[in-house]
Length: 209
Image (cartoon, rainbow, N blue to C red; front, side, top):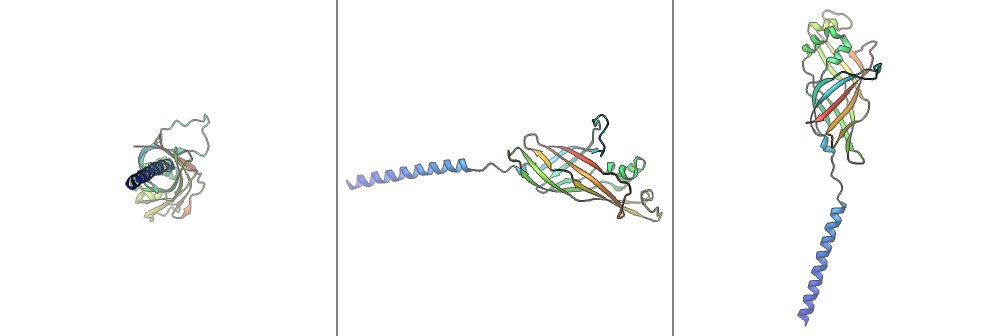
């Protein structure tokens, strides 16, 4: 009799324990937060950069195809291994000397730091951009036409392009598209502000590979 009572008590105990275990599993499953997709923005991208003038076009349309470029996004930076500086150089010295200077300078690396948060509906990553000045060194004979003081003995010109973020960058989780705008605010030649410089905007449109 005692053995039967003990056996029934043990069976009841085991049944209760198993039932609690299943309930705990269900609670865990229901309480698990949605996966953090912020790192979905990390990867390699291809796209275009467009120069957006301060004054809109008369017909309100921009027919330029933009400059093709590639970028890579890490956990904290957007990196360009060959940043297209020609459009910047044209703004400084004009079309006539731009190609010569770009060839003299060669490829320029540039990076933009960022911090990111998920949107409330988990459909996109919002990126707060923190760009630093873009620095270009021009050496050789091409500097004679750029140096502000006209000094023929000058062997190099340091160009510092002031850049800021106009708004947050945005990456779509489903579309895999990344877009952001950067404002070119100022240009300094050997530490001296370029006179009568007009700010303009660079628009970036990327798709993750």
